[in-house]
Length: 553
RNA sequence: GCGCCCAUAGCUCAAUUGGAUAGAGCGUUUGACUACGAAUCAAAAGGUUAGAGGUUCAACUCCUCUUGGGCGCGCCA
Image (cartoon, rainbow, N blue to C red; front, side, top):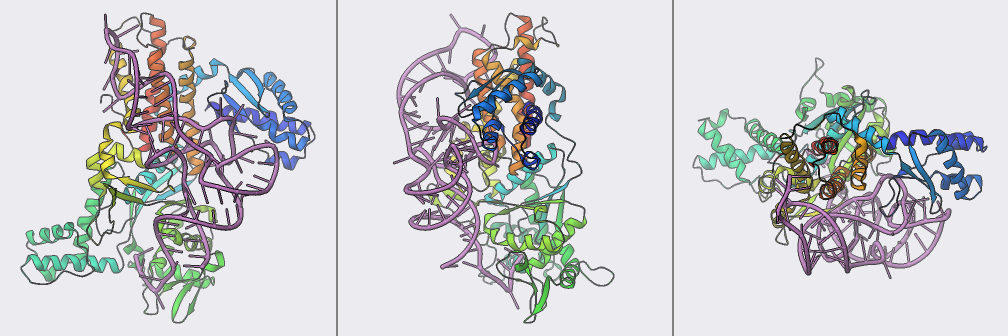
């Protein structure tokens, strides 16, 4: 929170300064500068680049501007600035008063798991739609990456006060469902002793056989079985259970069948109505016996088919109706997580958002690169149909939910990555996630030990926390809010893994230099409060990533 | 052929969206447990940010081109 406070105060100072210097108001209105944590070698808490940016407009030396600003800062921000100096090309380097850090420490201890949360965003109803894998087989490791990113992003947005709904769109319509039903049926017949060959392009996984086995065990007659329903039922149960083990739970499961098959009193489906809506406003048109979406009007490469010549709708038609449905449910901001192999789809769905009367910005598509699986240097095939895939469950069982989620969130979504299974297994005990979790375990160990003392106070003097290690640690704690802000701006939760590792680093350094339980009761009490704040932040941060924070390891 | 994404230490990846001497983990080398957990700490080595231009006070970051990789270009989903 410290950085935000300082940025707000400086913003007023700098804008007033620019006004006094006679810069025109349009420029001042749009002017923005940054407050940042300087590199390690610089002895300062924050660096401000406003002087360098203003100097050009004022046609003067940035260092002169910096000097003038510093005078104002001392005058107007006496509670914050202990020192301010000009550095480099014209940076203003700020040194904070320790009292600012103590105040923030106190805030963490009071607000606990609510620290960093906001209420201002609650008007925005956000939908995060992710995973949305076809219910034709268990989730594989690539889905896991989307699940980790989507779920964590939702947690971050929730913490920032947005009204967030996590939704899974179930593609239970289309050719692949017919193939699925047929695959189970053939397995069923084979198990009954019939000598027939399996489908060339059927789903070959063992789970298909398991579904057939269940149906046989239930003594069902082949003519009474709805193979599609039975298959989806079992597969969905598996998907839900695998996701739960991965700490992912959805608020809503939305079936494509609902908008494709359910009819209103006029006998129309939502897909029918969506297409009519587009046709009425000339965003869809008939040609060559098919219905086309005029997506080129909004920047797509070519127009796309909504309804085939044989009268069947395409997947896109369902998707138009689905997004229309999202808006009708009151969502103002849509976030879709797609595997990067769907990037060609972004332009047409963006076009349809605009045709529905919403701005391009109402939809944010996050593309994550697919995970290439490697085992002992050999690429592993990832086709569901070949039956030769690595499931999310397998990996979670092997390396653990926490390590798996943390690893996926270590990287930006658009970075490609090879996931070597042998390596992942080998590194289990050396994974960075343990480095972070160990902080919490160490703190709790100290808490347990401190229970034996009766000379401690619960309202200690924070002013005793004045070593470099303690100061660095407190600064890092307050940067929790900055990390939230970055995640919000970039719509990616991966900055939190880096932040937590840095915080852990600060803690372990502090631990080496500053003994918590000493024969000085006052200092001991203060440091206990400090590490209590550390556990608050570590737990908050890990929770945003969906990773646990055990008290013992 | 057209389009999107990527290229950073031996390996896997960051870099607060344009800031100061590009950082972590793993691996390598060397030290530190008779006081709170050594799953830790301290130190060393490791880089022309794929290459070439450009934009500016400042470029890993933005623009152009080249090279190399991933993906997409269906009346499939």
